[in-house]
Structures are given as structure tokens and as C-alpha cells.
Length: 146
Image (cartoon, rainbow, N blue to C red):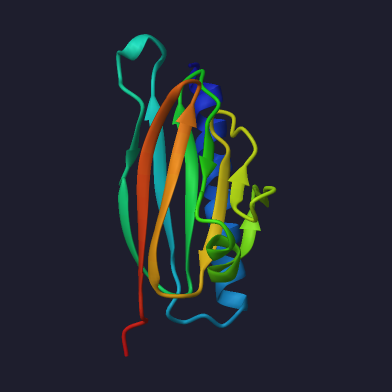
């Protein structure tokens, strides 16, 4: 990847992340923050497909931003827990509800993001896919600290 494209991608990521922080701040969610989950990998298995981190601990009122850094791979993030997904999250960006009332992203191209704000405590499982490869991730949401 050329330096110009890499720099453009970094600037775009910084702008997206800043926008989410601003949204959270405007809603008055003092307990909230935004965390980044990197989806990475390269074709041919030079760098295997993965999530960093694959288990994420956050406080309720926090958002997660999935960023696709898997070169030449479009990825999809799928929460397969039925109605639970819709009931505990708000402000989906890049996610939509499927026929089972679960949040699913469209295919996320390289450098793009999708995000969710988690409002209720619990453990939420998801799958990140790239072609035939699937990797499981977990979000653990705890009560805000006092």
C-alpha cells in the first residue's frame, strides 16, 4: 500500500473515532468510552485472520468500533443472539437488523468501520467472517464504576 493511501486511511480512522467520541459526549454518557477492535489478516495466510482483542471488557454506556485492517479482505461482523442484540445496544453505525432481529454488518471494506453502543450488562458473542474463515469474539459489558 502506498504512503498516500495509508495516510488517508489513518486520517479517516481518526475522524471516525473522533465522531463517535463526540456522539457519546453529547449524549452525556460519562461512564462511556469507545474501544477499537482491529480485524486483521492478509491473503495467503502470511498474517492469519484475527481480532485484536478477541475478548473486550467495557462498561455499560461504552461503544465498540470494529475496523477492518485485513488487507484485500472484506469482513462481516455478526451477533447471532437474536432479540438480545437489539435490546442491549443503540446507535448502530454500519450494522442492521437481520430477519432474526440480530445485528449484522454489511461487508466492511479495508479501512472502514462499524460500531455499536452497549447499554446493558452481559456477555455478548459475535462472529467475524472473511470469506470462509470465521473467528469468534466476545464483549463483556459491566456496570459503570462509581
